[in-house]
Image 1 (tube, rainbow, N blue to C red):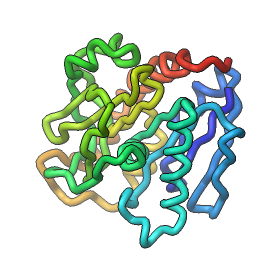
Image 2: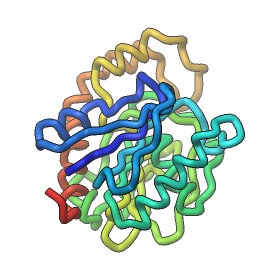
Image 3: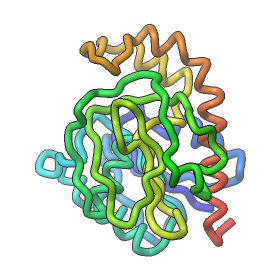
Image 4: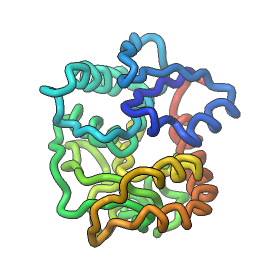
Length: 234
């Protein structure tokens, strides 16, 4: 299978998704917007993975490529491709499907649990996960649920943590991060301390809990296996 990732910041690459793809013999190509790289043709990939970034999904006036990226996502969904969005990526999928992206009541930064909804517990992709799962967060915005999407998970700070779109669930949006590695956490830890908040950890707390990445990356692989199983392309 040919996987193409849309990457918005050097520090927010594929993480453990790259290990899963290479181990499974899948081909990886990239569009790194921060390097000015071009979007792919729809015929050049089977699965689109949209990563996170510090910008807003609403920054189209500031970032000329953002409108083209939204069209690319919309076309991939229309063509029944596999589509996975993480953090900003989930927000971009939601916006491409006509939903709103807006500031969340709370910023959510660090390790906090999510809870599966009833739909999540019965989802073909999420159904095998535990009902409660601690994941990594780094976001201040959220999205309304797109029409035709199933709400899969929530947290205390943010209602819409995950959704699957369409009857086949071939489009998956995750507001949280399962792909993050200890190396990524260490890179984040070197930066400026985030402003305090009710759901904001200090960088040292994030780093001290980086052992959670191993289990989280295993969860990411399970989700990817289930998502990729929906494709007719090996």
